[in-house]
Amino acid sequence: MDSLIDPRPKTTVPEWVTITKDIPIKDYFPFMDSLTQKYDTLLAYSLTEHLLVRTNPWIIDTLANTDYYRLMEIDSFVYDQKTMIVIRKGDSLKIPDSSGVSRLLKDFQHTNIDVNIPEFKLRIFQDSVPIYSFPIRVGQMRERYLAMAGGIVDLRTKTGSGTIVRHARDPVFYNPVRGNKFHFTKRDDNKTTVMPQIPWIETEINGVRNGQLIHPTTNPESLGKAYSNGCIGTKEADAWIIYYHAPLETPIHIRYQLMVKDALGKERELEDIYKLKQ
Image (cartoon, rainbow, N blue to C red; front, side):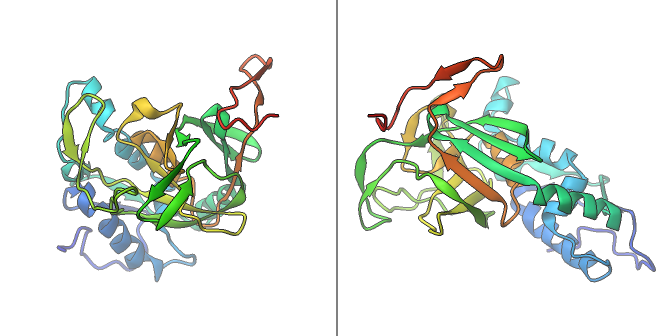
C-alpha cells in the first residue's frame, strides 16, 4: 500500500498527522494499523486503534453515516459501501498524549455492555451510567439444524456474563443454515447491495465461546424481534459505535428480565418471548 501518512522525518511525535490520500472503507483498517504501528514505538504508551479513534470521535460519526438506510433517507443509494471514502486527503488526526490515553483507559475499564433480551435493547454503561441505548434483534425461540454448527441448535440468545474476546474487522459471510458463503444482501427496500464491511464482535459468555456475536443486520426491520440464529443484531450505524466502545476484555452481561422501568420510572412487564415465566 502506498504511504498514507506524511513521510517527512519527525524528530518528535507530532500532535496532529495530516492525511495525504483518500481512505475508503476497504483500506480503512490497514491504514489505521499502519498509523498505530508507526507511532507505537515512539510513544511512552501502546497506541491502539481504539485509543486513536476515540481521540478523534468524528471518525465514528463518519463511519456511522455509511449506514445504507441513513444514506437512503437522503436519496443516496450506495451499492458497495467498501468504496466509500471515510478519511479524506487533508484531514488531520490527533495523536493522543499520555494524559489523554490515561483518561481513555480509565473509561475503557469502567465501560460495560448490557443486553436485555425481551426488551430488545443493548446498552453501553460507563461508571454505571447508560451512555448509549440501541434496538437489537435476538435469537428465535426454536431449534434448527445449522450446517455451520453441524447439528440442531437452540437458537435462543444465551444469557450470562462474560467479555468481548474477538473483533472480526473484515467478516466473511456464511449462511449458517446451509453453510454457503455469500457476498450480496437483499435490503428491506428490496434493493441488492454488496455486503458491507462493518466489524463483528465475538463474546465469551459463562466461560464459553459459543459463536454468539454482536453484529449489524442489513435488514433493520427485524430489530425488536426474536429473529436471528442466536446472535445479537444491530443497525449498521450502531455497530460502529458499539465496536469503538468495546475493546477486547470489555465486560458484557446478557440477561432475561421481564420487569423494567420506562423513561418516567414506571414499572412495566415485557412480553415473555421465550416463555420462561411459569
